[in-house]
Length: 111
Image 1 (spheres, rainbow, N blue to C red):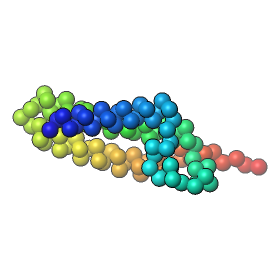
Image 2 (cartoon, helix red, strand yellow; image 1 turned 60 degrees about the vertical axis):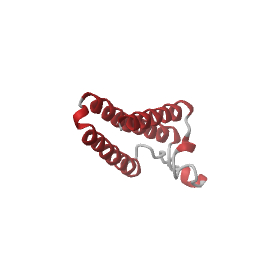
Image 3 (tube, rainbow, N blue to C red; image 1 turned 135 degrees about the vertical axis):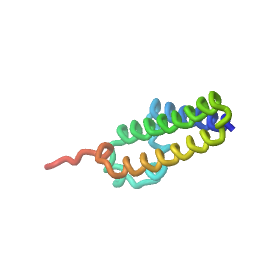
């Protein structure tokens, strides 16, 4: 079972690195299909940075679950279950945070 966590964590980490390195906002669900007017509301570079950071942290949660479950193999199922619960809660938190904060919003220009 820990292999699933390991593969998932490494895949998400790779996605995070590629997204950050090539500034691939096209990989952000919802943003990639949004209208040009809607996209103007956001600072694309900051949005990619925040999403890739959140992906890296979520990958770390899964990878930590793998390592801990290898060390404490008697509790593997419990540890992996908790790592997926934390992963899910973190993703929910990240989506809410990005949508509620002004950190990724474009600055309004006053005339």
